[in-house]
Image 1 (cartoon, rainbow over the protein chains, first blue to last red):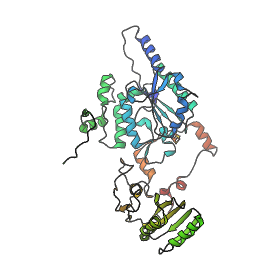
Image 2: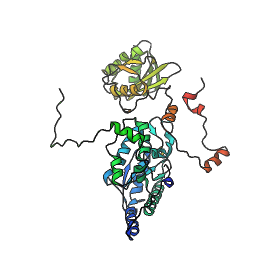
Image 3: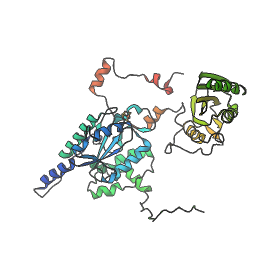
Image 4: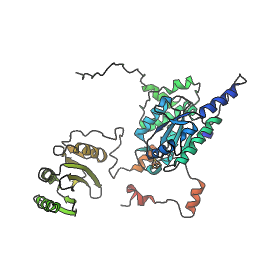
Amino acid sequence: MSSIKQIPVIEEKRTNPLARVFDELVRFCRSRSLFLLHYCTGCGAIELPPAMTSRFDMERLGIQPMVSPRQADILLITGYVSIKTLKRVILTYEQMGSPKYVIGICSCTVNGGMYWQSYATAKKLDEYMPVDLYIAGCMPRPEAVIEGLQQLMQRIKTGEAKGWEDYYRNYDYYLGNQQKLFGNDWQTPTDVITEAKHYDLLGEGTLGEHTALLEQHQQPLEALEMRLGHQVKEPAE
Amino acid sequence: MSKEIAHWLDNLLEEIEGIKVRRKSSRRVRVDVPADALPALLELLQGRAGYIHLSAISCVDWIEEEEFELVYHVWSYESHSLVSAHIRIARDPGVYLSVYDLYQPAAFFERDIHEMYGIHFEGSPNMEKFILTEWNGPPPMRKEFDSEAYINEHLSWQNYNPEWLQELIAEGGGIIIPPEEQRFSQKKK
Ligand code: SF4
């Protein structure tokens, strides 16, 4: 599961003779218009401004920074992920609309990097969410970042970047690792299983012992109370 | 002018019993005091010498001597100099007085030290978790906490041993630091 190549490719039956042509067109368009959410967790983020601005200019590839996870296609994790941050990263990832891609920049996301001995940082990012591409280095230069982004575009175009499908198909595995780190009462506000059904990506690994554990204590999500204006909450008696 | 102040400060400090003053430079003084004399010293420095800024409290764990060292760094805007007051307290039970009533920023430093070393400061306004809000293990900066054993238990590693690295190691290169040289928990007693 940790390697892209091991993800099974499921061939679907398509009846429309033009379906494949459309697929290819859609994939081409997708790869040419990517919005990037950079979650600057660590020091590697410092190489992003030159990669984004005029010197290396990732916009000429059609990649632009985006401000909210809901509108972003790529989640860029730039550096070491502390366990506290990892929770937020997972929440952010689950909020993004599919298809979504994750890039791990820096050696720290690969294997803890120079924080390998630290109690506070997670070591393997791809245990907790599928990573499509790693760009190793401490820290990778903007050239490497641009190269990595180009590779991702290529993979999207050929349909190889399927990490997000893997998250739905093997949700139990990812949830298990998350529970191991955050405790058994870990719950995110996103209902991943329902989403998997929605995308028709319910695989063998979607449900399992860890999701059963989740269902035991899962609190139904409630809409937040709507208020107009600024109100100060009365302290409880 | 600053020489005068320095001289005057040295005289002032001699008022306290059991004090050892070492002047590191014209703008840095290190003082070692017994733990119970520290509040009096800080009061003196703050009230009579203008050391109104507590810039940090740091902590060192001397596990072999079974002691914690607390260092209070106070700065004066008048003489532009720093006094570092060192005290030692017993590691067990690890309790000391808060200096919150003298210096209010101490609340943060004490809370931080409490979280990282487990020292309890009596009279500090808040001893709750500060940064490690989602951490349930022992105070991680104490020397007996074995970070490596902890991560081996809770986290796993990417298997990464490429050929080029093996070649380097075979030639005697690579980064090879024997664990016992690097890690406190595996040091020979
Ligand atoms: S790999 Fe290096 S530059 Fe990147 S986050 Fe880790 S320490 Fe920082």
